[in-house]
Image 1 (cartoon, rainbow, N blue to C red):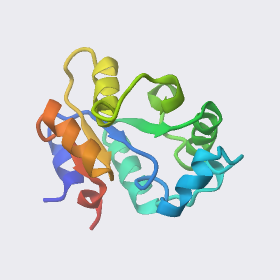
Image 2: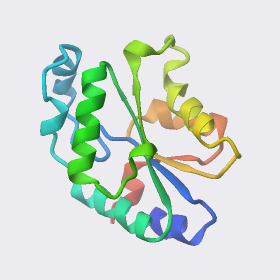
Image 3: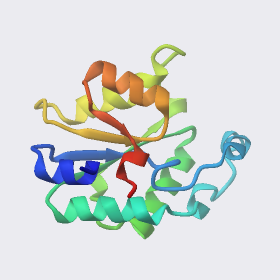
Length: 158
């Protein structure tokens, strides 16, 4: 059974999607442009339409859809929100959570736990959730905190 079917049939009613490499294309050569805070960089990212379609199917099946993404600068956060309004207008503004690294206190050991920590702050009532992610370190860290809560985006692909 595909992950999307499992989510719909289960009691999981919150799904968090990463953006870079999940909802948008991500190329390792993008890193220098990101670190330079290149204007409009995120606005021009190509959407991964098959994953956006899966998110919309979940939304249409009464699953609460969230964004849990990371960027380096405040301007990038605003660009990501604009991108989401264009390509994923069904996602509620209050469900968009973008961590700006320059505003966070973290170190090498805690960086991979930033998303799961933020998710737990958002879902105060111990609600069930799934994080769809492409970064293996973040998946592993999230699953250490809440078993089987993070999944690689490939599990949504046919």
